[in-house]
Image 1 (cartoon, rainbow, N blue to C red):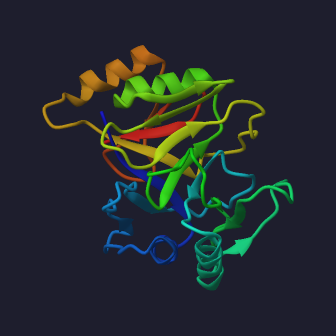
Image 2 (cartoon, helix red, strand yellow; image 1 turned 135 degrees about the vertical axis):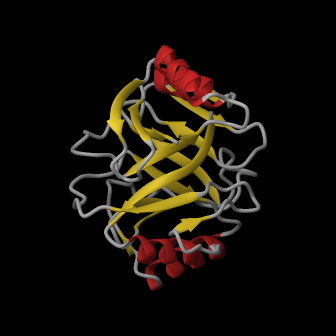
Image 3 (tube, rainbow, N blue to C red; image 1 turned 60 degrees about the vertical axis):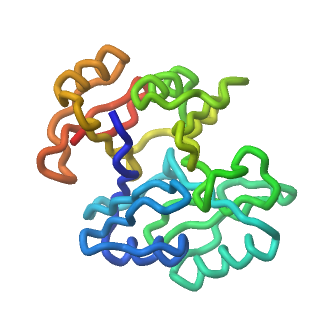
Length: 231
């Protein structure tokens, strides 16, 4: 299986895609998809959803910065495009800046010199709530090695580099309704889709049913109950 995209529910997919294209310095195509960046950054797909956001997301992007001035410039650019500063309980001494996009999806701009995101590109990490077991599940599902497995925290990264996907361990944000950010998978060239679905089930995934965000996709959940789709 390959990671095709990070899928984000949006009240106005085209508008939210333009926001993120502006923040990340990327282009957006006619299907409200940000193609994969040269630094290995995730492809991002925006899909229509009129279900309001009611709780803090369990997944969010951590953006990198090269200096304090660059960090502030990224935050200012995001606010100028329609984002806003938010308080999720961060401490004053913490160096990251916490923001929300126009739909309220949280993201952070990490301070320069962060060793964990070094060399990962503009999107340093897709940071997720999750148990160590789900980190091991996704490592096996995608064939990405574990690059961190300590103190109930795990992280994986593509062998080709680029952003990491990390799971922070307890405490976990309560789930309330559908996950607004999800992973979209696709069978790699030469793979049989049903065989891969059966493999995911063997690893601990569960079939939910057809994905309402796009015809032809199958909605599944990982061992922590996080939704993802398979095309």
